[in-house]
Image (cartoon, rainbow, N blue to C red; front, side):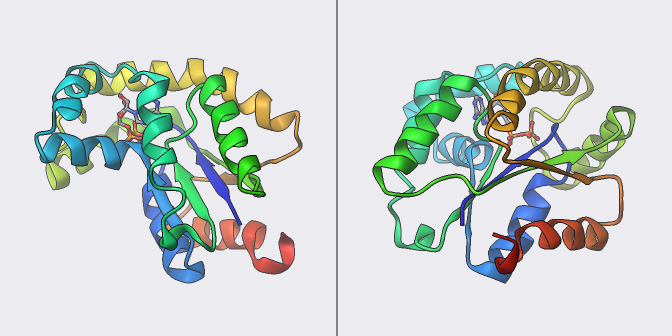
Length: 190
Ligand code: ADP
């Protein structure tokens, strides 16, 4: 089973992806986490991407597509993956479809977390205090949200056309959001 979690920054994608990962053995693949790992490991790629990320811009498609391609055949992805923060452009979505098709796989569900944009900045402030992410500040967050508003218009229709999208209320309690997601992805539902 391959699932995409789609939603604005701080919508709870990572939190829910980790819960689903533990429950079903699906592997969370977060391009944001992978990029932050590059930065933490002080790789040349990380150094190049940091400025873009801190400015709230997207990194080039080729960078994230290669990162996903480099992970998808790992044994921990055998049962499937939860894509978190990827794809963010139609080119990424197409590359992902091709990558999966070459392996006889496909995207089974795209779960959109619907959240009130005004509530997000409070979540980001909390996360900034807890995790110290350098892009969790008011200015960058606004840019990331604007980016989301624009790229969601490009990516969601791609999956809506394939009848793959379902939405959940991301403003509910964490457990409640999980329950909504499980109702969508429980094995009998796929
Ligand atoms: P959030 O969803 O909270 O904004 P992420 O951890 O998903 O955060 O992403 C952080 C940053 O990493 C993004 O603002 C962007 O610069 C970069 N990034 C992550 N995934 C992608 C992607 N699929 N395409 C382009 N840029 C990405």
